[in-house]
Image (cartoon, rainbow, N blue to C red):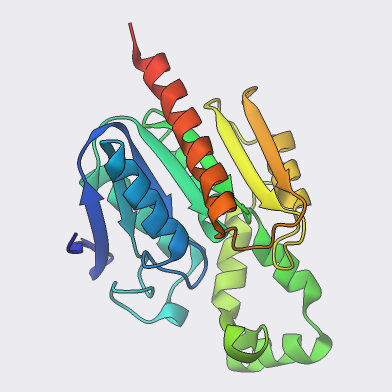
Length: 251
């Protein structure tokens, strides 16, 4: 399916949409990830095979969308999610967010409560900017202040973090308050996740106002959760939440 584009903040957002039965599933990728990743492609194929609507897209500065990665903040990427929801989809939605996408799905659901019928978080990285901030060494803090950006990680897995991203993200912290959402939520997290602690998903569950929230912990799972058995669990969670959404829509 050829990527299409819409405009957000004067730049182009690339997306793929397959129309089908509601609720439409919208996949929200992680920090520095794109819609060519394993989970996005697997979810897209799964939904298409079931005749269910699905949308995958790239935030600005990611993948095929316009802009440079370091020019954007969490607020910008949240606005991209809302632009896709408002202008590419119709009807009830299930948001499936991976890593940073798990934080963005919560922010987007809070902004569009009437549209969001369910959530699936995959290593949901709510408030992960604070984890980064706390882990910075004195030298890294100094470099961030002087240069406005640093690179974290090791080898081929390095990624940039900007000062403006960390400062902006503080406006969107969720884990210090009740997350006022009532839709069903499924959270999956690997207990060997070296990037986002599995306890983050537990904290999300604790802060959600919704009663129908479940956390699935994978003892041997890492951060990516892209192995076939892990993908199967993700698809099962999406199917379960979508079924609950359809049931709730019946008169």
